Length: 111
Length: 116
Image 1: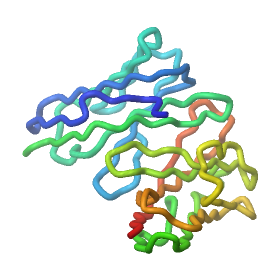
Image 2: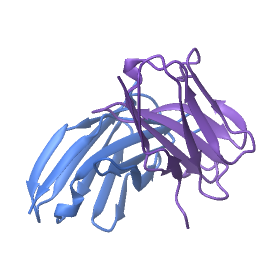
Image 3: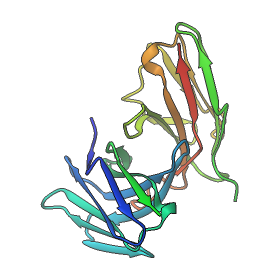
């Protein structure tokens, strides 16, 4: 079963705007990770937030985590056409830190 | 550093045929993963190795799928016989240290399998 469920499934914005994607998960996690996947390519790790953290920044990325609501959000500021991709959240759980992915959000940034 | 290598990149077979995928992880990475990604969905873990031992294969359809990592480095994933629903991208990933709560997985480009 999918651990994360992203919302929205698809998002289309103009270059320079901010993009916000949300993720909900079902079971307890050690950490939550966000990945990007360009069409026809492998996944690229973006950012990891531990279960005891509430917010984390990396460049134009901001991730929040609310363990009481079992939800996370990814904010991309000042988006660029090159940010066009699918974005997945993945909860890491269990003793083997198994990653369980959601279905992803398809982000399209129009120039 | 070199990334995770996979081959072939594309494969088209007919149902009931066999197919094998190869993965070479990042040098020094002890943990290796195989994922199946069906179109429109997120990756699903099939099997996880720590060195040459299996850590998790709970979602591997063992009646037709098999995987090995004999020397703790390269790995192969085999499907025999293939079904139409096996059409997907098969992703290999590796990570340095399974025991770390902040372990990051690095993904290869994937093999796109089409079963006709």
